[in-house]
Image: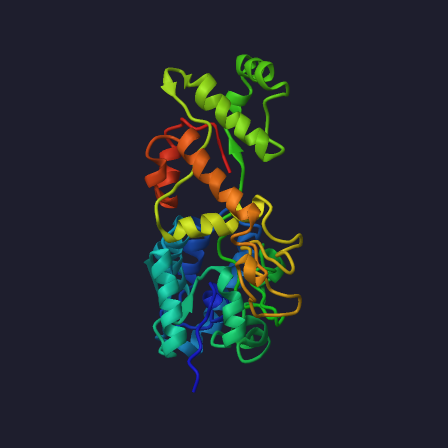
Length: 347
């Protein structure tokens, strides 16, 4: 008998039917008033939804659910706050454990290989959706919510409210995960510095165009050079034109694949993933769920010219334009370092 795993935060949405005699409408009202504000729903609408949870929980008194996710603030909030709310309202106890990113992947892999239940649900990267679709060891939410989980699927759940469901839908067209959080690729910059008339004048005098949000990588490099080596200081503090991280860790891997390489031109055009070569540089023919290869020799682009150039530039900019020590940071260390306020931009 196969042991299935839930691959999503949908645990609480579609198994919302667990509960006990401890389920309490007064507790629901307390959480609505003290924590679940602001909301797109009125308090009356929220309470109606909570009453559905309480009622659906009745047949499942005493159930515990074990969930695993990586340690980012989103999941810490779920682990420390939402699990408490869920238990008080429904009677279900959710043990939401937090581990490192690599440990989460290892746990998912171990459970799939051994088919021994380590956790009931995982919040895993959507990069694993193809694996789940191929191995069929994880429940797909599409079939379950329409089938045996229908009675315990929140009738107020609207999939259109979730950004990124294309990424959590397998090649079989089935939804395997409700997006819980996203690592968005964003460009941010110090607008207060960019707006300074003296810096605008100096930048235009040197480069011949206005200082502003870069429209290409050459402009990004110009801005990094300008703030690092021309401006040098703001209010007596040494500043830098770029920020990144270089410590050997799992997050450095997805720094490249999600999606430094594709931003540099590796991969085929298309949304949400290019065909036949996706943003990781892996080749997968249209209509297929089986990767053909990542190297150029196997039809991929992970070591193609764009990828090689991108990594060379990543290394160059990290050493030339980022603050000292950035090469030894991982993702989680680089973010607090930015709070020093000495970096002009980052993507």
